[in-house]
Amino acid sequence: MPCRRLPFIIGNVRETDLLTLHQNSPLMKELRAVGIPDGCKKCKYAELCRGGSKCLAYAKTGRFDITDPDCFIAEKY
Image (tube, rainbow, N blue to C red; front, side, top):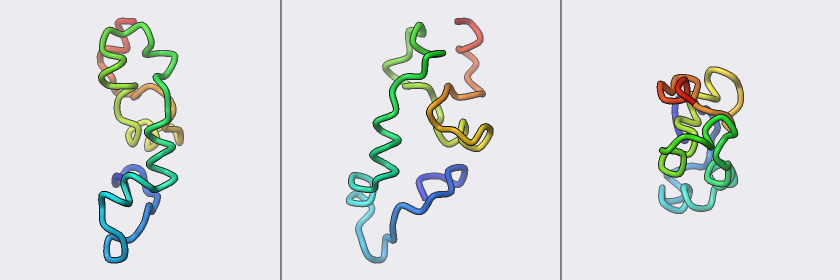
């Protein structure tokens, strides 16, 4: 699993090394492909954080393509 808050199995490290799982898992590719959420695009840190914690967003909302709900900077924008 990528994170305890993102409970999707991406593979088995006993069968495939972790780097390969990280690079080739369809879920990991999807997570990396998520663009910067609309609510973050004006933030000066948008390119660095890309919306914050995807796993926390998923845990709280069921979606990982939105702004981190606990971002303290997002309130300013």
